[in-house]
Image (cartoon, rainbow, N blue to C red):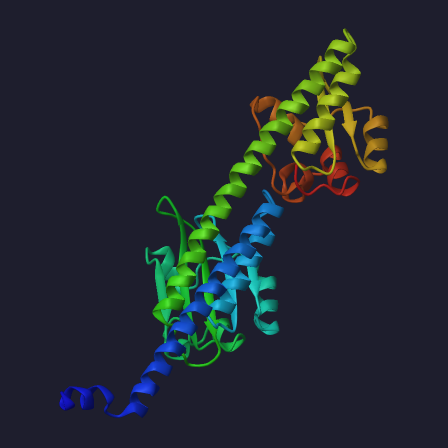
Length: 325
């Protein structure tokens, strides 16, 4: 009897220390859970207040993920199948942030965590970037002073759509809990991106339907009068395409002329009004008419029509300051 009591009460100071340790562990777990719940609630609030607007949602997610993972800074990039594009960043050192801004969209650097993600890995955890062959000489280390990092792929139906990365500037690998937390934020980011895409597509479809209905109203109210119809069509098309200005061209016998214009710069409008000739055979307009299909000229200033001196192409670029059409 006394042996049992002695074993139970033996070393009471150690027993008290064990209880205090257990209490501290439970308290830490409770605080971590509360922090995660608070972060999730705050992100959901941003999502609800920004329907279809992805930028503030990704910013909020990355900020919470970086803080909860005890990282110095974090980045989130989207992927289009060829290049990554910066979508959010938090706490990034100025030198590295400047480099990212100037670089813009980029292909995954050879040997980098992003290349490994592109090649199929869902999680890349590098304990010491300065000792990693693919990272040691990278701007991430040289400009961002990164030591430890963890990169998680963003995948939708097994298709890579981006990556979220947390970085530390001291040699301190991430714990399993912190990695799991970042994976959870990655899942939320994919859901947010998909929701934003669906909302955007729905909004665009509604805008197109509304524009079509408004043009039909103009047609019904102007029987036989094409001018207001063309103007309404062009206005809606220019707006929906996010274009600076637009011209609707008409083939009249052997001539091509501007039938309507919208928000055209004054100098270019004067040219279209006073120019007696038609766009030449090398012009984008003539090429489109001959092709009887949609043609996309990414850089009008590098096109054959402009380089050959076609008056209409030159006017579009120099008077209309047109780069894309």
